[in-house]
Length: 375
Image 1: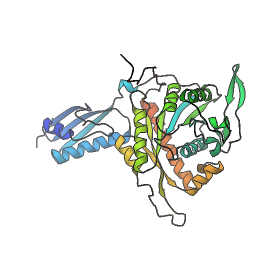
Image 2 (image 1 turned 45 degrees about the vertical axis):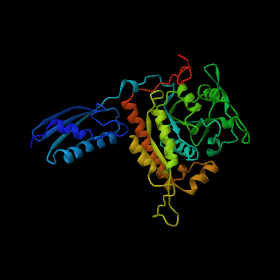
Image 3 (image 1 turned 90 degrees about the vertical axis):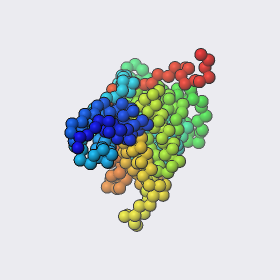
């Protein structure tokens, strides 16, 4: 059977690349189609280096041509990755800090701070130099989770300037607004005041050499997020969600914020927290209290990496309350879970750094995004 190029293109119009709205022909991803007898060669250009996106696109092409054109077709798919110029944002890294990872969630109560704390101690156990910036101005929880609630950062002199020395616990350096307020004191600040406090903890601190700085962002998509991304060249973002539809809807908004043209921060992946419950006396049973694999399905739909799932385990909550992150429990299920997730995060950071230019802090002018401004 002789294949027709028009039939091939018509079949490819039924395929959408993960994370894109248009079909691969309309979007321009299909660069060329060549047919010769029962052989067809498809040249595909993708805008993401993610391996699972490339594999899925290749599998979809082969299956669609076999289903809609010819079951006997011999298909070769050539994939080239070209990151659009607008995504190649260039900038200078902060001296001493190699990678800055923002840990975010669309809504509160999904365990974002718990995940951040356990990622930090796991990275430290792996031998990395790690810092945590607790940017959750109105609900700082890192001092409690690292059992340093009563600590205060001291002042040190660096190159003739006075700098804050981050508090260190379990090999992790950290700064939080919680160090500067009493536990019972509410932080009643407007956006500019909160932003100024964050800038001081970032630039007036002696962080030293860090392989990773994790930023525990507040829930939502607001003022603090913009301030952080205006101040820092964020390497990438990790989004934490629980499996239920309400949390996923907000997580989707958080991801779209990072991927928006104005922000343009790579999303390293999604972590599903509270994925399932396994009773200690029934270790083989899994109860999906909040739904099953919701965050995993969202990651696939949006074309971002699924970094792993964290089960509901009582010791995670207890460890956070007692100030010793659960990932430090040697030989436990939780230690293994966070080691796997952390390895995935590190792998995505390496992949991102090899395939994208360094990020720079975003530039937002006074009038940007203000639809009420008269032209």
